[in-house]
Every structure is written in C-alpha cells, then in structure tokens.
Image (tube, rainbow over all chains, first blue to last red):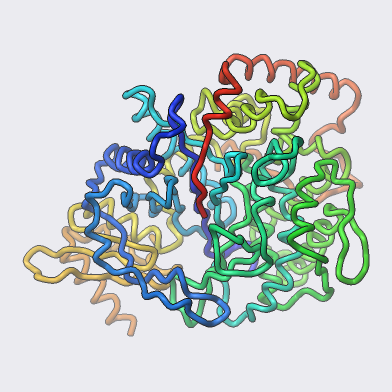
Length: 508
Length: 62
C-alpha cells in the first residue's frame, strides 16, 4: 500500500463558558451536539448511533477484558442531553464523549482528505459556537488537547490495516517513529509536566500524558501504542489501528504529514520492509525528552547504542520510505504519496536547519514564533499568564478570536485546504468509502434512518414491523461509484432496500 | 483543486528553487511581520489573561 488507506481523525474539543469555569461540561457538550444537529434539520431521535457492533474492551493482543458490548437500548436514550449522538450527512459522527464534544470524521482514503474532513469538523464546532453565542455568555470550543492543569483529551487517528500483520511487529517498528513524530506535527504547549509545574515551552500537547509503551487504556496510563481492537469492518481481514498520542493540528501541512507519514510507515510494516532496527531506548521517557527540547539539538539513544537527534531519525524514516515507494511503484506512484513525501521532506529540511524556518508549516513552530515575539517585545517569562492565554486562545475555533485561524487567514501559515472546500465537506461525504452510502442515506431518506454506525445503517420501512439493518462492513464498498445510481434511483427507502438486495444477488 | 498551490515532490539541489533562500532582508521582513502579528493578536487576546487562563479548566478525556 502507499499512503492511501482507509483512515480518519476523531477530535475531542476543549469546552468552556466565558466567566463560568464551573459550568457542567457534559451538559454543555450536549448543547453543542444538539444545536448543530438542529441547524442541519437533524432531530435528536433520528440518526442516532447503532452500538450493536461496538466492542471497546476488545484487545488487539487477543483477549477480551470481560464486559459485553453496549446494549442496543442505548439507541433510544436520547432524552439525556449528555448522550447526544448524531450522524451527519458527511458521514461523520458528532457526539458527547465523556465531558467533551467529539467529531469523528468519516472514513477517507488519502491524508489530504483526512485534513479536509478534519477541518470540516472544526467548522461544525464553529457553527455550534456561533449559534450558542446568541444566548450570552455562549460556549467556546478549543481544538487543543490539554488545559495545562492536568487534564488531557484526545485527537485520535485511525488507520485500517491488514489483519495479517503481526501486532508485535507493529509495536516494535511503529514505537520509535511515534517517539519522534511529534517534531513534525506537535502543536506546542506552554508549560512542562501534566499540570505545567515547570515553566517553559514544549513541542507536543500530549506527550507528558503518556505513561506506558503498550496498552488498552485511553484515559489513564495512556500507552504509545494503543491495542484497542475494534475494526468496525470485516474483522478477519482488517484491524483498525487506533492512535492516541497525536495532537490536534491547525496547520494543514503538519496534519497532512502526520497522517501521510504514519500511513507510509504502516505500509512498510505491513510489507515487512524495514531492513534495520530503529528501536529507541526507554520510549516513554524519550517521548517526553523529545517534546521538552524545542531546540531539536539533544540526542536520543537507540537500542543499537547510537545517539542521534530526533530529526536525524525522522530523516532515516523518510529515506527508507522514499526508497520503499520508489522500489515498489517507481514512476507509477500515486499523487497522494508524492505529495506526502514532498512535504515530509520540506518540513524535515526546515527543522534540520533553523527550526523556526518551519513556522509556516508546523503548529509548534508557528506558535513558538508568536510566543517568542511576545517574550522579546514585552520581556515576558515563560510563566506569564499572557503566554498561557496565547497558548489556549491559539486553538479557539472562532475565525476572529482563534489565533491559529487568524494566522491562516492572513497567509502566515500555509493553507492546503481552502476554507470553502472544508465548508463543503461539512455536508458532503467522501465519495470513495462507505461514508458516502451512510451520508447519502441520511441526506436522501432522513426520516427513515433510525440509527447508523461505522458499519451499519438501520432503517425503518413503512408497514414493516421490524427495523432493517443494512451492514456496511467493507469500508471500500458503498462508494458513490458503486451505489450512487442505486441511491439516486430509489424513490423511497423500500425501493432502495430492494435495489440493494437485487444488486447483491447479481454479484453472487 | 483549482487554484491550489502544487508542491513539487522531493528536493532538487541542482535546480532552481521555487522559493528564494531566506537572506538578511527576508529575516527583516519576518521581524516586521512578527510585530504586525503581535499587534493584531493584542487586539483580540483576552484582556484579563490571568482570569482567562485560570477559568480554562477541562475534565480529562480519552
């Protein structure tokens, strides 16, 4: 595989009410979801989540932790606003996860599309904020991953992988990459330590919150490699690698490189293409040490005894990936892979020299350039509240108040996905995955869809006593090419089911 | 995709680069730009930074 594979990004947003730090975040998150849903004509009782196939306690190492799957009765529990949970016509899921509103993007097949539908999620949150602002003081949302006081919330990446790849190989070969990847795509943070007890600046928002190398948890004892094995797809064929250590990105380039470089490294792991062991000593400690050195000058130790800079290790990964792509595809390489390798190289070249040269492309560098400007102009120490305020407000989703948004709007950071394209993706689903079918059902038959999930659409057919569940277990089926004509030609849900059944019989 | 800047893949050490190498004048431009950014941010940054930071309290998530 190249950089192309089924992937997606899910983001929990920070949430607060100006002047009311004690406001209930669960209720507020519910307001965000229901407000946005209402703006799109989605009733809470409609298009809720089908939990039947969810098994968050299943472990990729091959054992269950012992609790059954969530009961489908949760479907009907929509009276409680903190359970708000809807599927959008773009194929995404918008819901309350713990104490945060979360947008899980639809499945896409390229890193660039991952950026498009991730940015669409940001605009979804912005729309909710605008609507809630009509009742002061409103609700503010932040695309970041920590409050700097000890709490962290995630931006998770998902990559569909072949089930054949041994998980032990994934752990061994992906861990060193993850230890240093933050240098290319960390979002920067004022404060060192989970509760910022040491003043200073670090590369990544999340790194201080990781305590284990491998594990199932996501909220405590967070592991570099998460073993959740919940493929939302044909389980014999696929595993969904759930990546929990990344930061939320505002910079398109960093986001693209994050998704693309990871997908390429995974392709090499699947093909068993790594010819050298790049293992890093003490991965968790090193993850934090790398984050704590924005000069990028310190070295880390590899298990073979070498000491090298994080950027050098990333360069090695890039060289191996470029050679792998060249060897496998030569001049037949796809555009997405070329785009990722090109940006990956540019970003590394900048970071290898004066890291500040990457300020247009990488979040932590862009943020640092502004913070250093303040420090110099106003002689501020790292403990100054104004620097912390810049850090938080950087991620405000509003166009006028969000500092990262202003940097992009004034061409101070490189924009790969124009806002108009992201805005269209708030409603339109990716056309080349099953997200298209999910979104099309909601767009065309909103009153018939009772629930949906990653791998099913549940519909109510007039006159039928039981609900019909349409499985969509194969992520690359249900595309516009495959079922577009069927959906367009269906006058109602019954005729859609009939044509799907006929098409199925035809393909048998 | 129309109107979007296309980035050429890979590095070419032997050919002309699309973007000029940053020299002293470019560095000055960057300094001026940082001043402009700070002025702009001053205009939107929360006026009571200390209270704003103190009030940004989150519950842990995933």
